[in-house]
Image 1 (cartoon, rainbow, N blue to C red):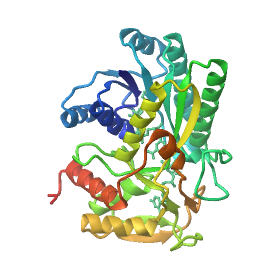
Image 2 (cartoon, rainbow, N blue to C red; image 1 turned 30 degrees about the vertical axis):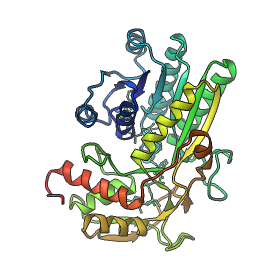
Image 3 (tube, rainbow, N blue to C red; image 1 turned 30 degrees about the horizontal axis):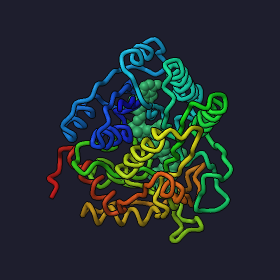
Amino acid sequence: MQILVTGGAGYIGSHTCVELIKAGYQVVVVDNLCNSKISVLDRVATITGTSLPFIQIDLRDRESLEQVFSEYQFDAVIHFAGLKAVGESVAEPLRYYDNNVEGSLVLFQVMAAHGVKNLVFSSSATVYGDPATVPILEDFPLAATNPYGRSKLMIEEMLRDVATSDPAWCIALLRYFNPAGAHESGLIGEDPNDIPNNLFPYVAQVASGRRELLSVYGDDYPTIDGTGVRDYIHVVDLAIGHVKTLVRLLSKEAGVMAYNLGTGCGSSVLQMIQAFEQASGRRIPYRIVARRPGDIAVCFADASLAQRELNWRAERSIEQMCTDSWRWQAMSEDRFSFA
Ligand code: NAD
Ligand code: UD1
């Protein structure tokens, strides 16, 4: 089975390539490397012992994408490629709609033209906006609070229309909660180009000494210790979730399915700091600052649908996320000896 992975050089994409190859799939990656490095794919090859074809293109380059589809016979596409920084999307909405929505549109058109109608799409828990209750179920109302989230919602809606128009499409919308951690080899992980926006990479950089201090955004939420609560999921569990989804898709269940990929448990910012301190043996200096605009108090998944229908469940603990993330941070900075 041959799978096209868009954005396969990125954080979640690279881990998914590893799990796909381990499960016996042949993987082809397209990526424009706007937020990743080609060396990641060498590391995927080192981990798996298999090199994978890579074509550096932008999804909006229809002609080049057509060529890729002419060259390979894909059984399915896993579509990760997109921009993902919320703040940036507020500052540059047109760039986000152009890249995420237009890139997806061209991809789906080329897929349709080549009769490739099995698709796994990277959506996000952000499509639930500020949920009225937790845990969050897949049939909760959808809302977007920023252009990034709106681009995900637009793509979800586009895909629903596509499936309605042509019952040959099999589409899975995977709504990720908070991906964290790294591959246990320490060879691949999250490697943000700029100052990290998300908690996990920021904490890892404070632990390594690359950044001085973590700002904790608010300690007056109605949560266990006043700090925000999220559902952190190990990126390898997430990657395995894609393989399980593919198995279901390729069994030819037509239509659109949406699944939450989370653990079903929430952890606060202070709990995560403590877990990271234990895993790394380093102190994480922090100070409490004002709430970050747009943040919600609590967000965690009800992931029982994925368990029932995909036979998937997150298995790795917060401790493992911290240990793996720290190993990756330490190895990639090449400055610390890691026991
Ligand atoms: P990432 O930035 O590490 O990976 C995305 C990859 O897509 C990068 O390698 C980038 O170079 C590539 N890319 C972007 N635009 C492209 C284009 N037009 N053409 C070709 N390649 C392009 O991000 P990630 O964390 O691996 O996220 C993967 C997907 O999952 C994204 O769609 C993201 O929105 C979604 N998601 C991520 C998170 C998260 O916290 N990481 C949470 C929910 C959803
Ligand atoms: C963010 C995005 C969301 C996206 C998700 C996964 C925003 C507003 N939302 O969500 O759209 O789907 O990432 O990529 O960016 N925190 C700190 N200090 C920091 C960083 C974060 O205290 O330096 C806190 C936050 O307030 C939050 C928790 O840590 O309570 C997690 O934050 P983050 O990792 O950015 O994820 P989300 O806010 O869930």
